[in-house]
Image (tube, each protein chain N blue to C red):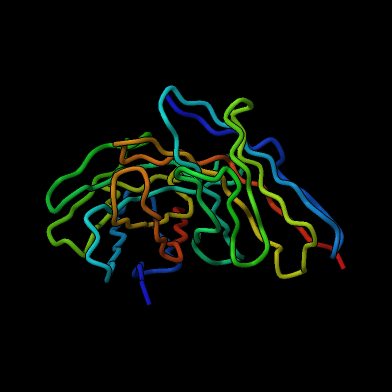
Amino acid sequence: DVKVTQSSRYLVKRTGEKVFLECVQDMDHENMFWYRQDPGLGLRLIYFSYDVKMKEKGDIPEGYSVSREKKERFSLILESASTNQTSMYLCASRGGGAGTGELFFGEGSRLTVL
Amino acid sequence: AQSVTQLDSQVPVFEEAPVELRCNYSSSVSVYLFWYVQYPNQGLQLLLKYLSGSTLVESINGFEAEFNKSQTSFHLRKPSVHISDTAEYFCAVSGLGTYKYIFGTGTRLKVLA
């Protein structure tokens, strides 16, 4: 059974803290993604990685960075958390050809920044 | 550039009634279209997809969607809904050779007893 695992389901952090969100997939997928989900805005792409150590900015990368040192792991980093980063964060991975492959999602990490 | 519009943010419907969730897209290249479903407190999972071939695609739990190129639509339908279909549904588009998927804002389907 394919699996994308996000390390924390719920986090509460304070403004200015550094936050790490971890995502691990067991499907040997090349492509991994971080999305942010907010009510009424749908899913917005923060960053994606098409291979180890390779990354590209998505639509809303400001205030975020990522790390992909191993194929199975893709981390999202908030260098200095702010209240407007309170949101649900979804990690996804994909195999197959660009554009056609199914995205497999983790269960999400709900971050609250106080 | 690609975009996706889901016209209804919420759709209430009684159990065993039919439902249609609307999705329109815009794209300058050939598209691939997807519907994902998100049950409460879970991530998204693929419901069905259109890549090529027959314009009518079906899921294993009775949903279907039809790709209409002239109307740039990919509406999701089910002839008879169950309480368990209560979830949020997202339409998404990608294109040949792209890594990016563009998601709509989602439609909350609430099935009433």
